[in-house]
Length: 279
Ligand SMILES: NC(=O)c1ccc[n+]([C@@H]2O[C@H](COP(=O)([O-])OP(=O)(O)OC[C@H]3O[C@@H](n4cnc5c(N)ncnc54)[C@H](OP(=O)(O)O)[C@@H]3O)[C@@H](O)[C@H]2O)c1
Image 1 (cartoon, helix red, strand yellow):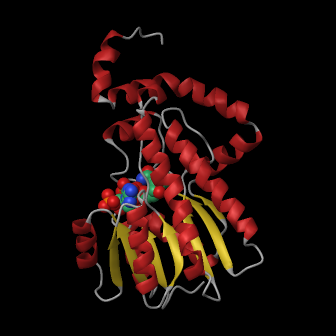
Image 2 (cartoon, protein in one colour; image 1 turned 135 degrees about the vertical axis):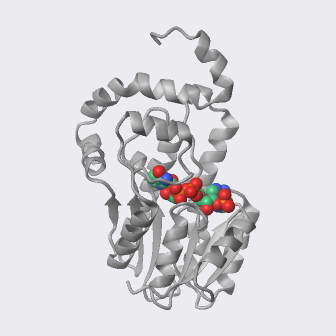
Image 3 (tube, helix red, strand yellow; image 1 turned 90 degrees about the vertical axis):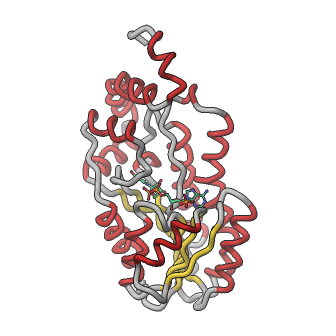
């Protein structure tokens, strides 16, 4: 797909991956409709990128009002959008028992329900075009569920299921669905606790600009599924074929995950001090 002259909606546009992605889209000749909750961040994004082809819509996509704003902006954009990139998400690292029901519900609303409803609402706009695409930015944890990331993994597994089902449902149309998964990427999405966990587990991480470059290549080439990173590709496959092997591997990492997860929650510090070490 040639991106030149197309309008691309990008949620998470002001984020660590979103910023270089918007820059690369503009370089490819696209118009960008950037979406985020914080108008000041979107304004800064517009200032740092070449002027003229970036507009924005401010809205929390986890709310009906926020999604309505995105839909209004999409209908008003010229040319009308033919690509939707869903690159927003809420992060959550912590033990499942430490997370509040409200936090988990909010995460599912942001990471899974909002993308589903945005796609649904934008279908009439996307289907106006001879060729259009929905690009879902997933995660390694959407193929390989990880301890300490239960709700996040559930949301990304859900996104992968949604994308795959829609790709199959629209297989005989000109609308395609792409599920593209970065591995750990050096953005503010990862808290210091996650960075410390990744360092101790020797998890490799990518620069956001490199991730953006690979995403653009995949969008242009129409790649249906992409997992970035060689060991992550292998582990995602292994998890599908021999999950018991991955269970055993991750079990060995469990004490490390628990230690970092507990430290990441200020309210858990006291508990940690009094916890027996064997747990
Ligand atoms: N960084 C990683 O290690 C990593 C690894 C694998 C996959 N990913 C995935 O890559 C994508 C981008 O991640 P990132 O690292 O760029 O994250 P990031 O730096 O934290 O940026 C998140 C972006 O999402 C927007 N956002 C969050 N909640 C929103 C909401 N409710 N409504 C509207 N916008 C919202 C934020 O803008 P506002 O705060 O202004 O709303 C921000 O632009 C995510 O889907 C993430 O799951 C990231």
